[in-house]
Length: 137
Image (cartoon, rainbow, N blue to C red):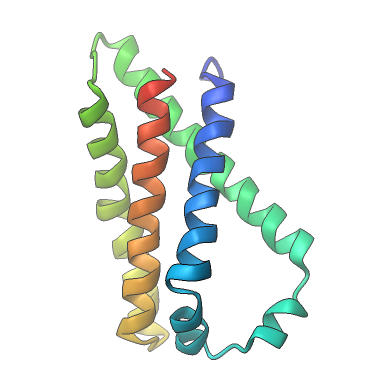
């Protein structure tokens, strides 16, 4: 259960975290701020150590879960290719994460724009993690 590649867990979490910095920074930052109704000043006033620390902790949990999943497959004799691991990670995001946030956004009546920004991020996040885990078994 805990016999995963911990370097891979940390590096995959970091890769997802970097994807978030790029996605919510130069690529979709302004559009995302408009969709959630925040201004740059409000964001700067946030507790950044708590926000970034908590986000990285959640990234580590997601990365460990993915690593544990791949380890479980290997223990049953499956030898997954790089493509299979990346597609498994993508499938986890598409099949679990996207519907979960979509349901939350429907009930909280958030915009389609925000849904597509956040759903796309999670797909990219999991692709990045799957890629790292595929190369660091």
